[in-house]
Amino acid sequence: MYDFDVIIVGAGISGINFAYRLQERHPGLTYCILEDRHEIGGTWSLFQYPGIRSDSDLYTFGFAWRPWTGTNSIVSGSIIRDYIEESATQAGINKRIRFLHKVNRMNWSSSSKQWTFDITANSFEILTFRSRFVFLGTGYYDYQTPLHANIPGIQNFQGEVVHPQFWPADLDYKDKRVVIIGSGATAITLLPSLAIKAAHVTMLQRSPTYIASLPIEGTFETMALTFLPELLAAQLIRTKWICFSFIMALLCRTFPRLVKSFFLSQTAKLLPSGMNLEPDFVPLYDPWEQRLCLAPDGDFFTSMKSGKASVKTGHIQDISKNTIKLTCGKELQADIIVTATGLKICTAGGIKMSIEGKPYDITKKFSWRTAMVEDLPKHSSILDSGREIPTRRAPVSLIKGDICDEKWE
Image 1 (cartoon, helix red, strand yellow):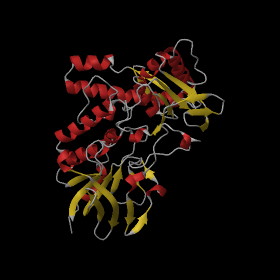
Image 2: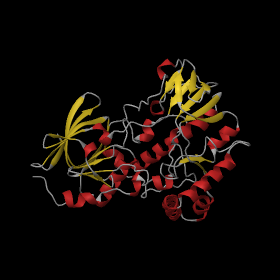
Image 3: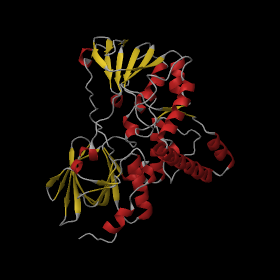
């Protein structure tokens, strides 16, 4: 039996951030982090597809207590994972992490005022942990099972079918014809990365999305980091990006037609000569109704200009051994199909919850700012809502009234 004041589930960016704020504000509390995987990083440890990166700038996505001081705003997944690990090590958080500890069940007891966790460690050892408060930094998707989209005829395809969530390390796509099904951030990231080696890459979408080009290195960032003290520069840059995000969101919601016109005019400038916006680059929705996709230094459009990448809009009618037939009659030849069709939602990491021994279904409860959940005591969590960055808020203040004045009975 292992007893702690607080147990944090998940050693991703939100779990590490919560741990730092916890030990900063309540140094007398004991805590540990339970991590199912073998290393720190969460998403940035799991995803290994070519070009993996965040579509949020690292100045705001990163920790306020250890600001990102690089000149690149959009960076690769490996850099993000290293940044998280280095931050955890610097703060001594790494010593509190128990890797390969999977939480199977958690039960709340009002009589003992504790959570009890059933843990499988190292795939075989059964352990029991207890705590007075729990933070779930488990993300919002299933780490074990990808989302299987209903794609007509996909079973007939004789080439390789790959889901980005579980990218094979030995996949050889050199000189191959690759079709990416999907038009979200993953597809936008994959296309220019795969086009470097592939014979041709086609992004097949049912409807277009907004794609904005963003400079990898900004003039303001470079100047600030060159002429100002590092900490001051980092704080100014972070403030700039936070303000930019809120202003952009406000403009999109207040003046959607104007912003849409602006985005489309910028996209038109980046397209290959003679290519029209219709039908592949005019979304059916207004900006910010769905998340904006980023193309650092316009790499997505550069690949198209090279002739090694293209975009097709349409619905799949059927797939044969090496051909994707669309309902419009067009056909796409493929050696590899990448199904970048999204992630399978999984709340609380799939942990089976119970209150007083009675099953608790978190998916049927209301959530307050994705931090607290109806009828779930002594708990907090963080989900990326798409509008707020997980590291901007860590609800450590919720703990103060809950356990700081309590003592073990």
